[in-house]
Length: 119
Length: 119
DNA sequence: TGAACATATGAACAGTTATTCATATGTTGA
DNA sequence: TCAACATATGAATAACTGTTCATATGTTCA
Image (cartoon, rainbow over all chains, first blue to last red; front, side):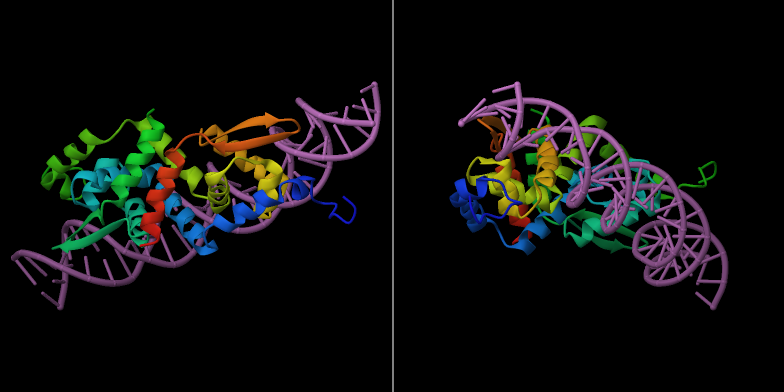
């Protein structure tokens, strides 16, 4: 043990190879950050409900608010977050703006999550 | 429009079928909640790093702390959350406790997330 | 049995976040 | 151009969350 840093436990000596292995396969810091940010977006039941609402069809903000029994403002704020994460996109049709799932990533991620939750 | 609730916009009238459709396919409230809770667990870069560390092999708390350059306490707190979500499990080996991914759900969910993030 | 080690946990604090309220921006039709 | 509608947004507040610190629990070995 000798010159060992006092703040660390014995594992540092014993399992150094494991530590090295962990560090070797760890993705870059910014990838980890982005990944956590992505899941954070899914980690709110309001946004999950919005995503489920858009699962089958494009819907305008007003209908979303009505469907989910939320204020228009709250929906808009959450849609902004979903859009920044590229999970949803939108298009204007006259006075209304329709939102839709950008691609199938959302559906696949939710499907995987559902598998874990409903088993 | 007439007797329409003033606080709601026209969409309520115009797209009532869409609203009904949204409500019809929406999962139960508790499933939505559980799903959001699950993703919330993935939505923290510390926990993501722990999950990646466990991706390839079982590791004890001490090695995790050392690998991720975190305090043992912080790691333990996060492991508790991961365990409550059934994402990780553990076993004791002498003085140490080894954690590992409970099943392949974690790997699949992370893989889907990575696809979205790294494209 | 007791000392050393490994892990867990409660309380407190700082940082983050979702909603609300008020209001701004942008579109349509008369 | 103006009124009505649809959506976006900034500020404020309340609730939540991750880390730290101190300490408790549980295991091994002499």
